[in-house]
Amino acid sequence: MILALETSCDETAAAIVGKDDGGVCVLSSVVSSQIALHAPFGGVVPNLAAREHVRNIVPVIESALREASASKDDIEAIAVTAGPGLMPALQIGVTAAKTLSYLWKKPLLGIHHIEGHIYANFISSEQLVSRSQQRKEHKSPSNYSLPTTRSSSLFPLLALVVSGGHTELVLMRNHFDYEILGETEDDAVGEAFDKVAKMLGLPYPGGPEIAKRAELFGNVEWGMLNKEPTPNSETKYIKTHSPFSIHHSTFSFPRPLLDSHDYRFSFSGLKTSVLYFLKKNEEKKRDEHFINAVCYEFQEAALDVLIEKTRRATLEYRPRTVIIAGGVSANVELRTRMSDMITRDFPDTSFLMPPFRYSLDNAGMIGAAALFRWEKMTAEDKQKASTDWQTLSADPNMNLGD
Image (cartoon, rainbow, N blue to C red; front, top):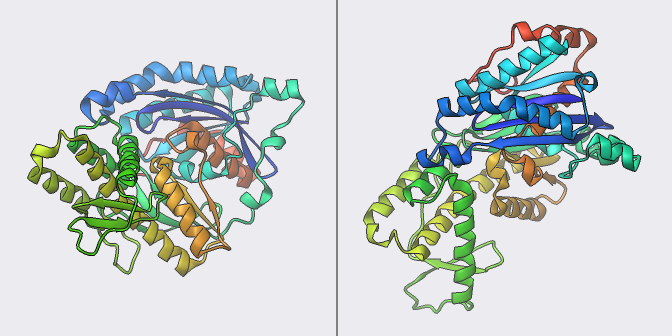
């Protein structure tokens, strides 16, 4: 078992994870959220986040151990998010992990935050199974493991990473073999969601609120428009992929770099387009239907780019598996549209997405990545990790694969 810690941004998290037969079993996962603290500011304040991490890190670790019915003697190694992220926040988790590594005499593994998000797809189940429950039911972690096909025969694998700080397409030919095919030139898609929500006066975090309102707009429009438009209609009708079949609005937003012949992303222009549009329509910003329509059109524009770039990369590289990873992977519309696209256009390609509870920042995903790294390490590597408490440092700009 591995004790994993995550403090890269505004979630203080700890988890106990185990691995057997190629699958990851989460024995406990505890997350202390800071959303209420940062909501008045419309975003995360690094020093406030660090202060809360200091307050919460020990109780969260104790809760994770207690829920897994585990003690330090059961722990084989300690893992922690070493980067990237907010430096003041990262330092709290790294310092706590180094301290426990020293006191408990356990090996220490520094894990890349995005690597954790990718390996959230290897968690066997959304269900948490404590050790005490396993003993009571005479079950072992192997009962909750992923099938071998989800670990050994997934590659090559294409990952669409979408979060508040990252938007990139990553090709993996094997475990921990990363090739970044393209990434955002400016804002990450999650950041764009949050900023557009702030423009609309919606609560933080903005991504879930925009998704909720976009779905509401679709439901309302389907109720209003249940027939094909007439040729003389002045209203713009948009046929969509969704179950609602037809939507209408009098505006739309650009799809930046949609037609570029590469895998770069850009969401700053999309965000700016929304800003200018809202300035021209200040009088409508109190109209709930108008706000919902803006959310719908913005989400459509962002998702169109993400899905089309993923489709082209899948066509070029022919991966066995496509996954989505990062906080925005919790977006239901993205999950639905990506699954539909892979099923329709690439029937021989598998599509994986993390359980909802592991899409957002958590320590279970860090533990999942650490377990696969631990399995791959030689005896010499593991021995060296026993002294990494002396050298591991937080790196807010850590590169994937470091």
